[in-house]
Image 1 (cartoon, helix red, strand yellow):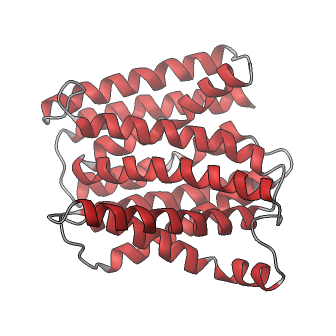
Image 2 (spheres, rainbow, N blue to C red):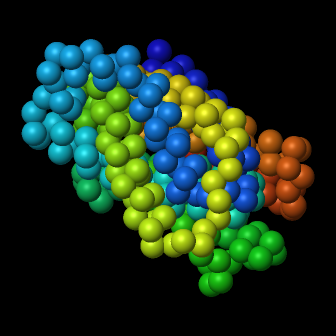
Length: 291
C-alpha cells in the first residue's frame, strides 16, 4: 500500500512541477511562493480548525512539537525558495533530472548521519546518480547553463540537497506525530514565515517583478497537497522505507520531462533522455538494493 501511495505522490509532483513552471514565467517568485503556502494552509483548514478549537497548538500541543514543525517548515521553505528560482530560469528537462537525483543524496545522508552501510547495488545506484548530475551539467553548458556561470544550476542543487535533508527528517517526525498534523501545522508555519519574508522583500526592493495572478498558482497548491498527503501516509505505514519512497517520488521527473519535451519544445531532448535513462537506472538499482 505504501508503494502505491508513493507512486500517487510522484504523479502529483510531476503535475505540480508543470504548473510551477507555467506560473513562474515572468512572475514574482516570492509572491507566487507565498500564495502557494497560503493556499496549502487553507486546504489544511479541516485539520487545523478542529485542533485549534480543542486548544491544541502544534502537532501535539507541546513546545517541543512546535519546534519540530518549525524546523521542518524552515527546511522545506529553504528548498522551495531555491527550487522556485531555479525552475523559473532552467528548462524543465534540466531542472527535473537534478531534482530527481534527491534519493542519491538521501542515501548518502543516511550513510554519513546514521552510519548505514550501502551494498553493491546501492553503491552502483549512487555512482550512476552522481554521473547523471555531472552529465546533465555538461548538457546545460550547451544551453548556456554551467556551474561556473549559472547561479540557477547551483540553486537547483541546493534545493535538491535541502529536499534530501527534509526527507531524512520526515521519517523521524512520522515516528512522533500523525501525518496530517505534521502537514497541516508545517503548512501554516510556512505561510506565516513566507508572509513576513515577502513584506521584508517588498520594503527592501521597491522595483521588482510584479505579481501576476494565474490559476496555475492554485493548481500548484492542490497537487502539492495531494502529493504530500500520499507521501506522509506512505511514511507512516509499517514497513515503509524512506529511501524507497523518496526514490519512487522522483518518478515525477518523467511527467515534467515529457511536458518539457513535447509542450515546451525544449532543446537537446535526445541526449537529455539518455541522461534521464541513466538516472532512472541508478534509482532502480537503489530500489533493488534497498529491498
